[in-house]
Every structure is written in structure tokens, then in C-alpha cells.
Length: 317
Image (cartoon, rainbow, N blue to C red; front, side, top):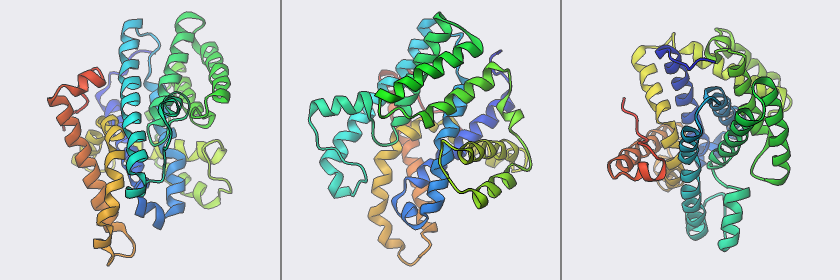
């Protein structure tokens, strides 16, 4: 498949990443999750699968080994660094900040978590590093095309048995994205539909099982992406450009947001007058995203991004 060059296609994908990352931050906000558990369950079902599908679609197996290793460095090293920070943080401050995750082990437990069972949102980077490595090696050195995807599927499924943090229910979405690319199908063209939102709502209303590894999960993920791709042409350009800007910075938001979402609960009592918690959620979402963008700019300015990720991570508006 030729490299994706259309500016509009890239903006549509960036906008999808932008809305998905905003939803991801939202359902990690404790009060919002408490107030709207069913909504968060639905969001949890399709948000990260949407990211994995897009990642599988965008990944090219035609990269030279050096370029691939550079890209892998930009996923694996930040994963290790931020997972260690996160584990140590919840280990030392978990009870004080009321974190849902806990860690009370030593060095060996820390290494085991990093290698096999990450906690927090960084599991996505762990999954991506493994999927990209297996898929690239198979397609580069064993077999290409559909056969390569099938062999990668078998290997990755086998790995999910031994690596507890690698879930087949997540891996399969990466492979679906790879299938789209292998078949020369533009996801933003094939999934885009004005009735996607109707299908999305109907699935939620009539679904009995809302989980990633189900027809419901696949339906929610595909119709959500189709709705977002169609939405870009129906909202003001200024708004779509801003959401695309958020999407271009989704990696930085993924890295830094766990450091800030836990802090939002400390000022929640100020918004006790709003029983719906919507105002608190909107303000917290804006605050967390803004702080993540500031951190990305700071990391670029201090050259920390190049050390940890191998490149700058902040993308201008």
C-alpha cells in the first residue's frame, strides 16, 4: 500500500485520534467514572481498540530495519520510563491519592510488571511494542501480505497465553487495522457513513454484552470511527482543526495524563453544587489536556523528548 499522503485523510485520522484521546482521559477521571459507570464501560469498550486499529492501519512493514528500530525505540523506552514512574508513584502515594491501582513489590516485581503485566494506561504502549515487533519481523523475514498477518495472529495469540498484560481482545484490533492496510482500503473512506451514529446508538440500546471481544465491541469501534470520519465534514473547520491538533498530540497526552488525572479529585468538593459532575468533568478534561501539552512542550524544550522518545513529541496547532 502506498504511503498515506492526502492532507485531508491525515486530518480525518488525527481528528479520530483527538476525540478518542479526549474520551480516554474522560473515563479515567474518577468522579466521572463513579457518576456514569455504564457510559465509561461503553467508552472503555471502543476507545483503545480504535487507537489500536488506527495504529495497525498506519504501520508500514516496508520500513528499513533502522527506521523500524527508531520507531520501536520511541514506543518501548517511554513505556519503560513512564511505567516505572507510574508504578513507583502508586506504590509510594497510592493510598494518599486514592489510586485504583496499587504496587507494593520490589525490584523483581517491578521488572515483572514492566515485562509481562503493565498497569495503568501504559499497557497500550506495551501491546503496541509487541504487536509491531512480531508483525514487522514476520512480514520482513518470513512471509508478507495476508499470510504474514495470519502468521502474526497465531504468534501473537500464543504470546497472550504467557504474557498476562497482552490481551487478545486488544491485539485483534491492531490486526484488523493491518488487514485494512493490506487490502488497500482507506479506513476513513470505507468506515465513513452518515448513519454510523445511528448504528452506534442502536448497538448500545440493544446490546446484551458490551465487551471488546464481541460483536458489540467490534460494532462500537467501527461505527464510532465511521461517525468521527463523517463528522469532520459537518462541523466548523476551526473546531475540527483543534480536535486534529489534540489528535496529533495524543501520544503526549497518553504519556502524561496519568500524572494529572489522579489530582483532579482533590478539587472535586468545590463542584459539589453540580450533582451531575459535568462541569467538573469538562474543567478537569481541559486542565489535564492543557497540562499534558505543556509537559510535551517542556520536554521538547529540555531535549528530554529526544532522549526518551527519540524525537520531539509536541505538535503545534
